[in-house]
Image (cartoon, rainbow, N blue to C red):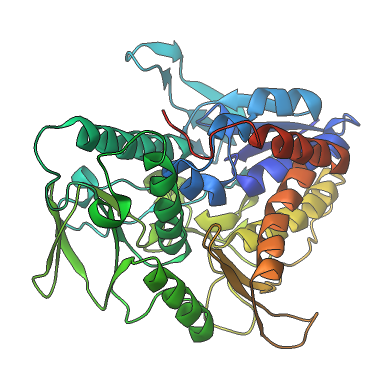
Length: 435
């Protein structure tokens, strides 16, 4: 059978593996293998809620092995680090446990078609101290580490004999993109929930401080100004400290320094200012990459140097027709590309070489500020232009994005039952994770 290997089980990769498994895999027309370095999947836009503690990841994670069993594809645990295009083979690094012991040895997998969808990682641009003294929110593990540090900081402040020191309970977020502003609002809510459960020596309005530092002159620089202005008003209502037009030059254990010599004291620093593709992709076996390690692909999502290798999502640089720009690293683009590749793989299995071309469609953006507000802009062929939305309509549309992802993985009935179960159990649980 035609061997299709998908590397990366993010939203796009997992949706594609599921759809291919339910069609080509179930009918024994192709062998579908998904490779990922983690055992479970969590929708990446939820990571800021996990970091803040407003969401328990145990109730939202999906086990790759179970999904593979239910949907007729194979799952293999490991991190791709090598590629042999001549042999059509990917190599997976040994899997090491928490104690440093090798659990799974190095393995190699043959492919007829290779699809790379490994997403992106935070880009700290080599800023001094950023790697050592800040936390990114690229993975569930990082989000949980941040939550533990935040929880421990509040517990320490509650039990220490001396007064709370300046910066001790301050969180600095570097980068005012969607992740940064959504995290700031979620932290405001979660820290107040947390202190309500017997943390009586910490006054969140007085002791807990949240700051955002952004090099651009406004929040959400990639999105429309009206949306940016609306989000800024909401964050100022929450007393989030905004440092616009400030470029970070160094990060230390005590805080962050900017190019204007401002020093913002902090106990925790989150780095959310820029993305790049994983470093292992840079010039991997001669494939063409750009300065942020993205694989260069044409409009069929095939890499420029090898027609049997495809890439999509954040790790791919796909040109936008008629421009010198590339498709932005956004979830909607990865979802659109996964749908296109589903059609392309069915054609490749039949031996067809003429594949459909990807045309990026921007349907707008939504920014969720938790219980405080949701704002966004809709655009595209449905409305002919751009339309600003906010409030309950924007919030329902934001929630529907996650429901659509669950539907792609489980089907409508399973998604509906899961949503109902969460609504019921939520009433008997703490509104914030307390451990």
